[in-house]
Length: 140
Image (cartoon, rainbow, N blue to C red; front, side):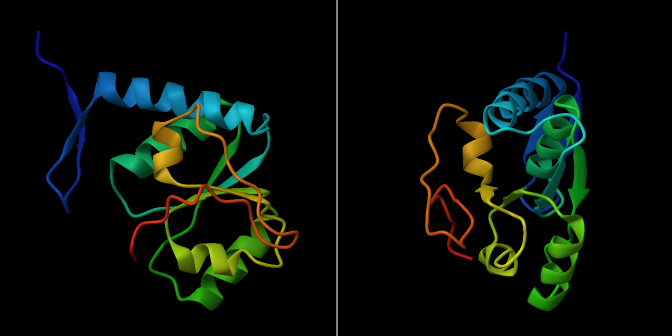
């Protein structure tokens, strides 16, 4: 029996099947629980439309969190306003501008897409006022 494709990334042409989505979302939800996300917590998600966004939203919902998508194409000031307004403590993004915009907000932990794919990886803690990040930033 063929695997059902649930999404094709318009930018890369890569497809994600129902089984892949379930597996990636389950692994990501385990990581979110380990990072302290509880039912009712708001989690910011600043990713472009594609399979990674779908996985992140699915994982947040699976742990009972509130997925709060933030358009990655916003200017830094717009990102800052949305991030502060959400009062979230955790954000999922690979965008440096979003991490900069999270300074002086309640965000204390930032997970990248690579973190969601490797739930056993430990996050390193950075300075007091900076969000904790995985250090897996792409060249943006």
